[in-house]
Image 1 (tube, helix red, strand yellow):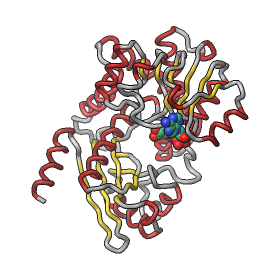
Image 2 (tube, rainbow, N blue to C red):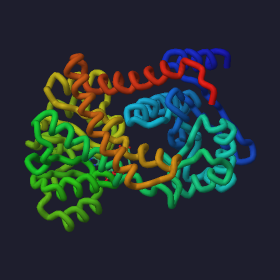
Image 3 (cartoon, helix red, strand yellow):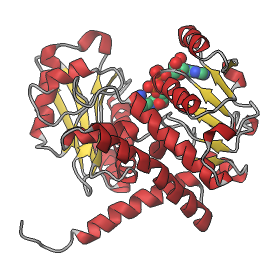
Length: 361
Ligand code: NAD
């Protein structure tokens, strides 16, 4: 017990976590952790995921990793939000009930607005409706910001345009070709944006036959390839919209595209190593947490009164931010993933600096 506590504080010190909260409700058997990584820019926002973790340590480390990721994502997206996350331990098919989520909502409320929750893996907008009965600090509710996927895809679309502009001095998407991995919620919307802007040569792959049938019907001109063949297509842009970890030792050598930009989270298997591999192959990689920030931008606007036009304006800025990050990467000769972190850290640091003086409000 003593040893475990030590490791938590060591981990907190190593990456400057502000707060780790364990919660347990005896009646519903709700057990989980809220991690608040950094609130320099604003309240720590991050979804609540349910997962059957093998151990409490596994849950803790997942929560720490995800909360820290949210700090970078929101900072790079220009939002006044910090990074946080909640994990709930258990089998999502067995533990859910109204009381269970209301109990969770009470723990969220007890943090007094330092943490804002939302749906995530194995939680739904309906679950969050129960959470909202006990706390105001929840976003992504039914009837508010709505489905984030089209907005996430739009952000990645602006990311592709920025990368084309940076690499080829034009953002005319019709002049280039694309390989989209995964045509689910975000991939199919991104495909639509590309087709609407005149893109003609597009390859797609998916493991879900229903999704492929839908695409075949709506876009007969789009070529469908086997999942393993999507990496080596002769295209300008590789667009990952499926799983994490797909850019690795095995796949990077296959890639012919000289730009990578999509919606997938944690797309690099090993952040530093594989971002370096891409840089050495002269592939312009749009860091995932910058390119796919449309979803968090969408829910952020719920906090201040949701207006679609404001969301779209903020999502458009993803392209400008990526352009800045590409420049930092070239100027400092560091990979783009590292450059994106420098960009986010600089913003946090600058706001910390201007908050040093006392002002009566
Ligand atoms: P989704 O489940 O709707 O779509 C993913 C698609 O990928 C599915 O059609 C699935 O069949 C396909 N797929 C899975 N394995 C594959 C493989 N090996 N090869 C080809 N296709 C495969 O999910 P989504 O909402 O579109 O999210 C896609 C990615 O974007 C995820 O990594 C997600 O975390 C990330 N993301 C999504 C959002 C959002 O708003 N939905 C926001 C930020 C990040």
